[in-house]
Length: 399
View 1 (cartoon, rainbow, N blue to C red):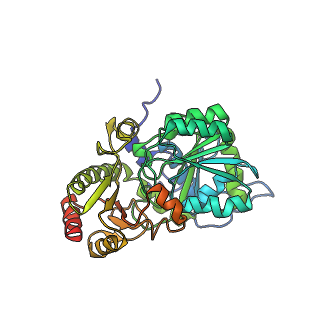
View 2: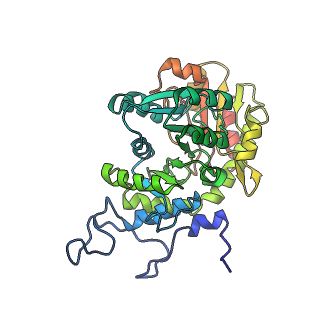
View 3: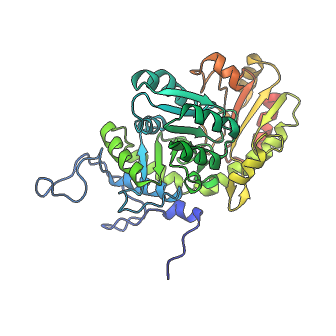
């Protein structure tokens, strides 16, 4: 009789893990050694040099593969298709190396500012990539543009940063298969708790592990997870050849953060839903963008695609448009006290920021305006504090 698979909450704690065989330590130890002894040239215990092989990083990578349901075994890939990097952008940059010079990447128009910058200001020059941006929340437009430009990779975020558009993952997978493109979903905003791209036939999932996976604003990292053995083989080579790997201390902290991911995400979602509803009633707020509100244009899609234990759950990110412009936004951001005015997201503490000035300042002004990243737009990352305290802080800031 086969063993019953663990629920996702249990996999966050135990997935891909086992006690240290030497000491019985419950948490994988931090292996800081840069090199490993060999009995004879080429004869070793599976570890040569820490860029290529690190026990602590491998533990994290196996956990990431497990919670994203890679489906690969150790025979397929040493860490089951999971790869950890020094940052989210390091993960993205390594993923782009799957493309040959001059090939086309079809990218969601509203993506993290660093992704936009990397593609437009680095890879178009250094790799000759042809970057085509499209609003993938409109499936018909996605299908039309993909058939015209014949991309070798389709890259999307859902929900997007910062306007929280929701993209039909099934449609992206279908379009990718039709044109022979590698499909990638940046799953940072949803986390594996809410959204399962590999289970929907996406080829690669990317995360900034700095955010919800780490969860405590104390570590920077990124990851890629794939369900395709041939892609895992290429990423294994690229990760080692490029070398932007996650260090053992960061891997340990990220693995520790993942242990509480499921319970944190439930609180993030519940509080964000409550706060988004309250914000929509405040006279200083022109518009609230949150997938959990019926007013969101892709609310029904989000309810099908983003779930905790079968129950629609919409994440911890809320975006608002204030009445007024940059002066009103700046005054509000300077007045809040419990919300920390800072970049990043997904930590236990609530953060607030102004994308046009902060996280998306590198996106050209005309593009920002076309995407709706205006001076009135403010992005909130709802933490796990008491939601009534967060509402009181927002109220005094807005009033």
